[in-house]
Length: 443
Image (cartoon, rainbow, N blue to C red; front, side, top):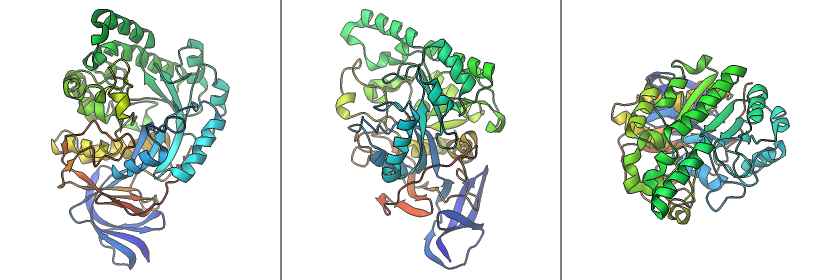
């Protein structure tokens, strides 16, 4: 007997779209077949719905510990499930920063009792923790986060010798935030001298400009080539940076690239209406950059799409531009926003699945996830392509209570989410309080 049988599915998986049933037993996919007639404890007819592997988001900030007035592992992972995200990698710029293996272990322990989705965590690099990096458990940490631009606390890595050591000795994938801090600080001075208190959000892409990104990302790529490192460059934002990466399938790449959904969706014209609510680092830039990123996704220069989910309170965001923090909450809305690109014939469904599930599983060697395969964990995002999702403050689930997509009518909705074989979310309601589990790696 199956625990759940999903009938009449339209499955998007491994570059194919096909009709099938899916039988689930326990936490895993037991059977994929054109017709499953075996008895099941529960049957879900998904005629007219799209079934995808659950999204794996390789870049989120859930703000715990130390910043829980903005978000928590429990609240943000719950919002992620409502967005079809079943697994996530969480960042180390919390308080205290996750720059020791002891603090990394503590985050895993908290998540065991609080995370609604499957999880892993990055160890964070600093100018002084190379020995911690060398001894990180490669089957536990998803990777090593290096802030090569301004960050929280002690996490800006700007010592050249330290960077050389990190790229030479890191036993796990290096993921980088690439911006050149000296250039940004100089531009901040220039804009403050010119505009005084009238510096505005619309100036953000010119303070954190194209060159500040390129100087840093080119340094990271150069170091990775020098040492043969596994490098994944996060949230790219500029046309110029695309010259640093090679097109092609992710399988044989040691240097990979990522874009976030907000950099695909918004451009500098949106600062007029959104202001600080689209202030993020790296900045949202010109329309020509946005188009270049879209082309790079379609041409396989960019391998992965993520969120960089980074909530701040309304009160924080409503401050003057110079005081307002950078970052946007996105996990609930990424997949519906990407489906807007599908509806406009910009992205294919197969490509969306590849760059939000398959490629993350490949790049980080996640065990038994990221695909719809017999024997794999039953993690699914089930999409209603015919139901518009009108984003309002009232239906936004982040602890911070707002979304940059407020006022948009996204053309598709998350109908249901299945996590480790359990139907946890359906038609706007949470049905199951199951917790996620720690991701495993084949390394």
